[in-house]
Image: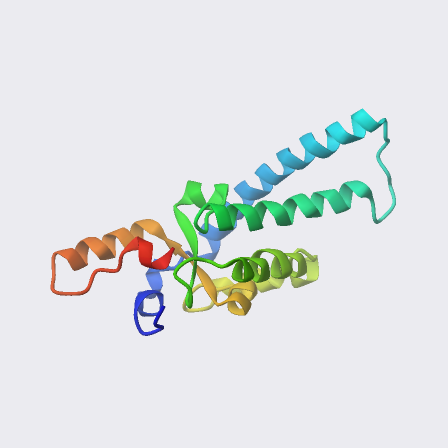
Amino acid sequence: MNKKSGIETLPNYVFAGFWLRFFAFLIDLICISIIAHITIGLFYKIMGLESDKSIITFYGIASLAIYLTYFVLLTKLNSGQTIGKMIFGIRVVSFEEKELSWQTIFIRECICRFILKNFVFQIGYLVAAFTPKKQHIGDYFSNTSVVILRSLEAINYGQKNSNFKTLKLEEIQ
């Protein structure tokens, strides 16, 4: 996609702010916790295993795998939306691609989330509160951001009733 059209030219209010993204993330964490507790807990019961108190456990590694897989698969297979993002009407979009590629998603949702999962690095999420296009550190590395779908629809409605070019939702998926 040409950087002078589409996403790059959108007004800043179209980009989802920190709190909207934060609450969507909380919904996603609830979903991930439910999935992890059911699948890993069931595995532990079937195998007759007891919970381990060491720092690195099977449960911890499996939980991390579920966490990363959840974000990678849902973002790719659901046009940039996880369950939390669907509930809040927001979507991940790329500044360079019409459709998010596996490479972009792997960088944003796997590598950057793995790094930002560490408590010390979580400050990287706060950056979204202070940047014009509401990007956190992972968004900068993957050249993405999160947009509010209703705002895009409002812009399109306004443009349909004027002489401006309409930006279609399909152009940013």
